[in-house]
Image 1: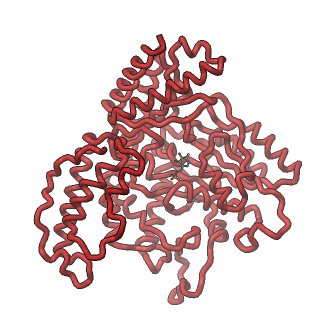
Image 2: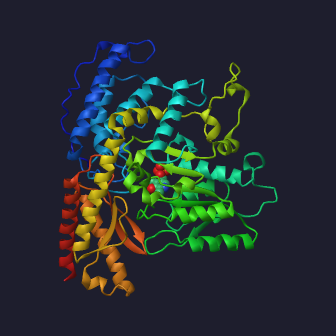
Image 3: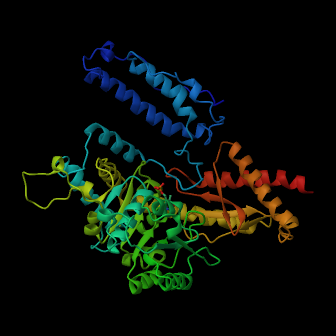
Length: 511
Ligand SMILES: *Cc1c(COP(=O)(O)O)cnc(C)c1O
């Protein structure tokens, strides 16, 4: 079971009697104010004390559902009781993404100004689907998208929008690519017509969201051609050219290339400048996936890794990853907004705006969905509060901590680093020489995989840190991904200490 929740400093004490008295069923303004203050206390306590929780709650699957009534409440309950249950049942049973020991996957951590922005977003209840349904939601999004473009060092022809996730951003970009190829699936669909097989190219290490986009867009997973990578897990451009050549030869139709800067497994960097040259020669849409690593482009001295991305047709970077913006916020930049509109615009009578002629953006015309969140507000609050300088400092520190961690791994004869560390993620494994020496033997290789899985599991059970894994070159690979706003040197040092301690325990077994 999860641990007992800690005492909260904010007492759940008296809310006004009127908490349930509003004839609307809603909280009346004074009850809302009192409950709201309690919620802010609760949030502040949580952020200040999150390290008291194990990063991963020690619970078994299915253990939580029985804690809640099977049927919804027929009559309203006091907000006080609901907040008490939040403290007792919800908070302790979360996986603590806000915990500085969260070193798994890629971190998503919510900065305090970002949280305040989310509260204001909920309060204002904007739906910037049309300009008129939210003038401020629409125009502030245009402003913030352009701020981010400048912050990333990209040229003015890039315009764009905010979506929920990189998955959606890439889906929209690839729908644009399909439209740009003249297929006009938006009007004619893909079935019952004379169409060649369509092809999209991405590296073997590209994120699953690219493959999912192919599934969703009706191209099928078969449309995705996975290009082999080099020793550093970066796409081989000559293999890309060869694959495109083979497809053209066989009368298949290439439509897009996806290059990744910061792959999900090992944060590899595809050679974007060379890939951009190929895309230009072949007349293909180039989409760059920088969902995680894009934040490093905030730092001018780190932009070498991004050379060539300014030639892309579209780029995705996730503020909800390494920019510390609360989920959800993904930035889709593109030079081809009109093409996205061709792919998604549909204006029924009830959405037509009759009372104006001025060309104003109606964001719903660029996306699959109609209703949209006012995501620009939290970004505006956060960017002003941190300043670019404040964001850069955290990102730079995470890169430094990763270099330091990599050096510890490299200096330890029982450990092996499995990929370069261009950003803030270290891929490695426990490879004691007795086993690693005979890795050619499949039994030894399996043994190493098992050993590392057990090592990672033991470290995660400590509750102090949370690591995740991948496979590189068919080897079980532990990842330490540093990207939580609140992760400091002591957390990274503690992670290494725990890894070393568990490795020593496992080594005894090997003797
Ligand atoms: C995390 C990640 C994604 C998916 O991001 P979502 O916002 O969760 O959809 C896509 N590509 C890369 C390279 C990623 O690291």
